[in-house]
Image (cartoon, rainbow, N blue to C red; front, side, top):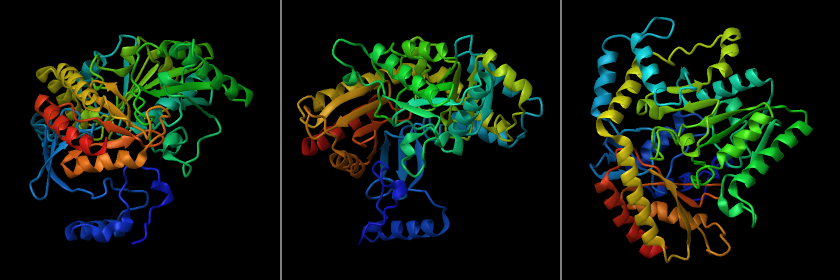
Length: 449
């Protein structure tokens, strides 16, 4: 059957090709046909053979036939699928009341105090929304209001969300979603791009400085630099820590603000600290968070330095009916409970260290693996045609992803060439999960890498 891939999803990593629908099991064919009739445009499925799940627990998903899949991809169920403490808290609140921020809610104040206590004391104001896209939209509105500027700097293949505003500075969405004329792109912090004799700090400083100069040349004063602290869509670049200070210095010197997008890298995802920016010793002006806040319920947040948000709050009304409502707040508070009771950050450190060490051992002699990189439970494995040229190999990457899926382990791809394995499990991922992952990956690597 002829492929019917649309231009909109042609670059999407490891996407399902609807042209091969007739080759799937009958029950999947029927559901996907029904789905195609009723869902709006832009949706896509992943894996050569899509999979349907009916339940989950911890880092595991169960399909309709009772098969157990190890989830090493989904960060949204932050503390694990169907975590009983979160489920109970949400159920209890749903049976009581669900009100919004126009009414006094002691539980909302309690939650804000607990969440803000995980940040540096200078970051002391919280606004709540429903999604990472909304959070980044609000963050950029405040940045523009505070600075009087319009210029935005992001990395070359960044993703920050899907509202019209945020899509305009999310280059990973592709040509069908054009960037704004006020947006400039810089390198992700890949140490391999640094010229001999220079440093990553200086390379990134010059990238930001050049972007600011070009914005000013075209009449745009800088509003903000926004970075995902794991560079998730650029290919996962977490190390070495420390280079961010130079970037933030240039941004502040130009009158802009730094927005740390912690939607994917936050909540101890990188292991060493609760927030990705902390690894670099910088203080953002604004921090954004997404649905991991509520273990998948629609809650997101924006944390501000008060001096950045105060004037906006005095002059612009912001209200979100569901942002800060009782049920998502109950989920958010339950997630913080789990972090405290289960020592989640320590588990992330231990599982992440073991996972990366195992992957490096398995791939150390492979001519097709350029790097294993990452921190905590956010790992990238870059697959290339040749280690010397570093030419990306997307086809081989997708073969590995689908071989893992066939062995019931879920990962995906990332990066501009979609040639980096994206391994980003729920933080419930434990030592037994690491062992299962590495044993399965070793089987696939023996055949493919």
